[in-house]
Length: 279
Image (cartoon, rainbow, N blue to C red; front, side, top):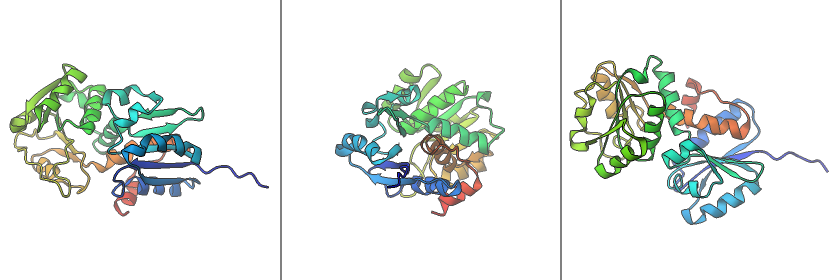
């Protein structure tokens, strides 16, 4: 009887999950590098989450990506939570360790910064204030990352102000909160501008904050990547900003998990982008 080694399995869990681009991305990397393994999308309800986390490692899973609505809940179920995942209040990457413990991390912020550095290499985070639209989980990852790379001030606005106020207590005096109705005024003197809201996404309302005060030469990026060129990016470019779309963040945040699960650091390049866009 031949003893075959177990193929490593990874996947993404959420509910719903059919929209996820992660299977196309990881599947492409597995093929590109000739790695024997599989990446599987799984629609798991909140009520079944704890049971699934106990069962999946026994089935050969070495880790998971986590998306809505599990990114916050998963912190209470993991055995080890990285400092950045704890600060952000959410995890997007799980590693099932050989000792049986579940390691939870958040790579969204690192993916966000890597996307900017790759597609706008001239960007200097310390050059001036950053403007962040939105105060959800993605915004927390972005704000934590911007502070880490040396942005001196972060101006934050959210459609509901109380949610934005939490950022000041969590992230400190570098964060100033502004009313959404006057959000356009935050742009004066800002060198980095980020939309973390779903406004402008296909099927969602448009982003309607005026960008007239955008500084020429500022960097503007939108976490939305469907469509790739959102109205926010179109207007920012017209105002003289350098623009970076949100797809690269998705690609870069996935790379650390792939490396931990399958033992190879994948390259994020144009071929990777096209593989995901054509899926």
